[in-house]
Image 1 (spheres, rainbow over the protein chains, first blue to last red):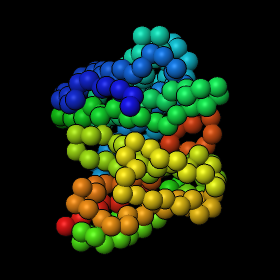
Image 2: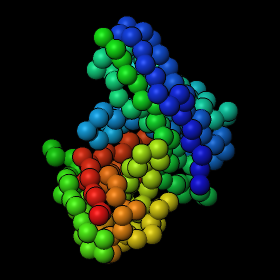
Image 3: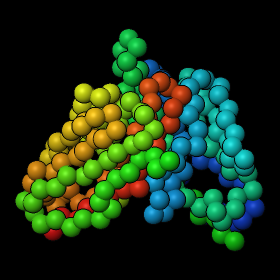
Image 4: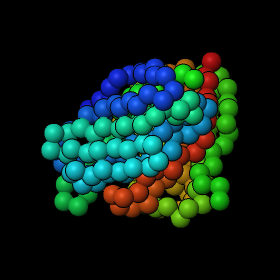
Length: 116
Length: 113
C-alpha cells in the first residue's frame, strides 16, 4: 500500500492570509500527482494534475509545485478567502511496470478553514 | 452535461440485506472507480474498471462486487451488508493518460444497522 501523507491535518487562517500545505509521496516510479478541492456536502473537484518534476500550476490564487525526486508537492493559497474553506486532497499514481500505471492513492487531506 | 451521476444519495440497510449502487457517466470516459470515504481514513479504492469489459480489485474489495455494464455504467453491489460497510461511497471516472483528473459523483451515504 502506497504512503501518501498530507500535512497539516487542519489549518485555521484569517481572511487575507496566505497559506500552504504539503503532500509527500513515494519518490520512485512516479506517474502523476493530483490535487483536489473538496467542499463539505459536495464531491471532490480536480484542481491540478501534475506530471513532470518541477511542474508549477496556477489557477487564480491557488498554485502548486512538484518535486518528484524528493517526493513532495506544495499547494499555496494567496490571500485566503472564506470560500476557500474546504478539504484539499492530494493523490498519487505510480508506474506499476512497463507502460502500466496504478490508480489514485489519496492522502487524508488538509482541512482549511478561513475565518472572515 | 451531468458528469457522474450516482443513485441513491442515501440508503439505510439492515445487516444481511443486499443492494446495488448505480453510477453512470456521460463524458465518454474509459475508466471508472468506486471509492469509500470513512472518517480518518481518506478515500479508499474498492474496485475499478480500466475500460469496458474489465474490472479489478482495489485496496478494500472484500464484501463488494462490481459490474461494468457498458462504457457509461459501473455498479457496486453489496451482497450481504455489514455495519462495517457504513460509509460514504463515491463513484468516479477518468480518461486514459496521465494528464486527466478524476470526475467524482455526488456520493451515496449508506448506513447499515
